[in-house]
Image 1: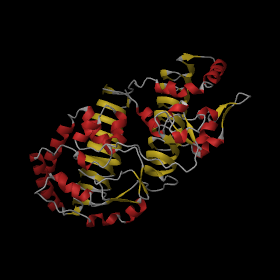
Image 2: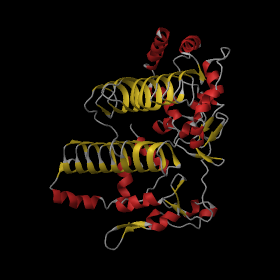
Image 3: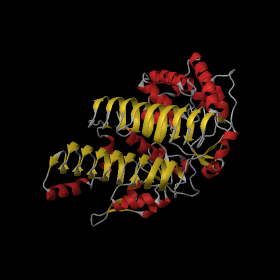
Image 4: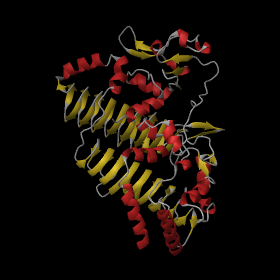
Amino acid sequence: MQDLKIWEEKIKEKRKSTEFRDFVKEICSFSPLHIYKINWFLSKFPSSDRIYWVQDWLVFEENRDTLTNKWEEYDFSKNFFLNYKNLFQSINLPALMIQSDVENANYADSINSSKNVYLSFIVVMNCENVLYSYYIKHNWKNVLNSVMVWNSCENIYFCSWIINSFNIFYSRYIYHSSNTWFSRNLVWCSECIFCENLENKSYCINNQELEKSEYFTRKKQILKQKKEFINWYKNSNTWWMNMWSEKILWNFVLFSENIQNGYFVNKVKNGKNLIISWGNEDFENMYDTFCCWWISDFYWVFASWRLNENIYCSWNIEKSSNIFYSYFCNDCSFCLGCIWLKNKSFCILNKQYSKEEWQELSNKIFATMEEDWTLWEFFPWEINPFYFNDTMAYFIDDSFTKEEVEKEGFMWREEKVKVDIPEGAEVVYSTPPARSSLPPQSRGTQGGLNDYQGFDSSGNWKINPEILKKVIVDKNGDYYRIIKQEYDFLVKHELPLPEIHWLERIKLSLKFN
């Protein structure tokens, strides 16, 4: 397929020159962080004319083999993206992706082989008990309000990028460590508080090593300052010293080489514009990739994992190769402009071709795309089905304005997402406002979170279980609740009730500049 190699090289060359902000806008805007109520469905897709209809994942999977019957004949009187748009808008999409071996995860998206997952996104490979978190994978248990927790972790709270660690609280960039609070950049450490950039240390506070007895005395005093916990995390430094890597620009890059604009990168050789990307010793060449792992030769790819290679301008690809401009293909190869195919090869716009037919037609399509100056571009924004300000793009960089992105064709959500508050539910304010500032219907509400938590007469931290019956509103007017699973974790680890909405907690852990 010599002609195909020529087109691949043209795409590669372009993708290697993308500006970081353009990368965030283009790719991360395909990762929603909201779940909407659409008719009787909970859906990651908001209601709009950009999608046809949504359905339950199990129903979708049962009929997935029929998607090759819902194909489009390529029309050369239209450009590639108009051809693709016609196909995309003809398919009933799964409202949420709740895949195999999943238990109790009805309020989450992109979940695989995990259980007890709530209001979280991308949770895969034997994980259990995760709340309000993003991209958690591979054998962990009890993770709340966190981003990027990988490889056999347990009891993680308000954290980002934690690997092979346990009992980590309000911390960032922790590797093979334990029993850590309000710290960053620790490797093989234990019992550390307010520490940074340490290796093989224990019983440290502010990087000062203490006698074991003195350490625990001071730890007890520090952990009584519950009101300060969230502020200590908010104000913590977010920069990481890259380790075991060469020729690196940006931070938290491990075991990698020749990386520009990399953040949360592990075992990658040669790449630019990478966020949450993980390879292995044999994988290289990742450009403009977001939320990808176990991959090689990726160019503009989002949310793809498990032994993929040679993927171009696509999203949600698994165990596939030689995929171009496609969305969610599993165990596929040589697909162009395809959507939700499984175990297929040599398809264009979901239509099956022989190998020879595919080569001839794809070559003609790529040639017209080059003439249109679109061969190396991703899908136009009017195809993107998500509100820009509800996606990872805006969470990562909130300098994007409504005017800027709407001009380019993105959608922007103006109104708050409607919250169904049970009739008669009592509202509790995380920070009680002045009575005169309350709306008339809420002026009878009294008190705040501190009415439901505090130290008892014996000095033990207590949380009143009555909080489970309340609706909490934070200082921005966003509503949330405490669920039983969360309550039990807070009580066990003597943690204060969260004062901000769960989406703001995820955003706080995504902070990296």
